[in-house]
Image 1 (tube, rainbow, N blue to C red):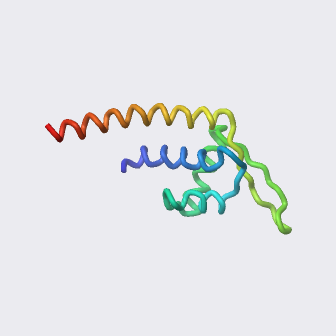
Image 2 (cartoon, rainbow, N blue to C red):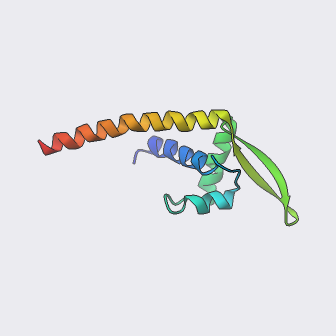
Image 3 (cartoon, one colour):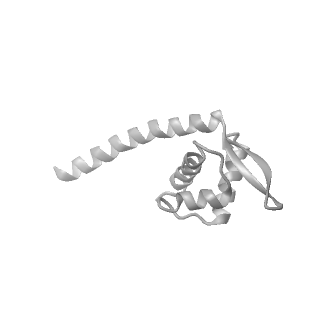
Amino acid sequence: MDAQLRRGVLDVCVLAAIKNENSYGYKIIKDLKPVIELSESTLYTILKRLEDSKMLVVKSVEFEGRLRKYYHITPAGLQRLEEFKNEWKEMMSIYAFIVEADLK
């Protein structure tokens, strides 16, 4: 997969993982594992990029005597998810065209 496309897909996967509830790094990795394998270093790079893009916000909460960062999706993050869904519909149409061309 093209590196730029993969990056965009990973960003959206992380946003989708926190769409319905705030989450933290280890849980995000665990939630995404059935779909895609992410290393911690890759995830935290993505989380930082999404935070810088204002698609999520971070809140530190004490948990068992240490701070844990919880990530919350913002309206901009929700909008990015919707944009991705629309973009993917277009990609599926393109894919169908390519597959159909192979059948002719």
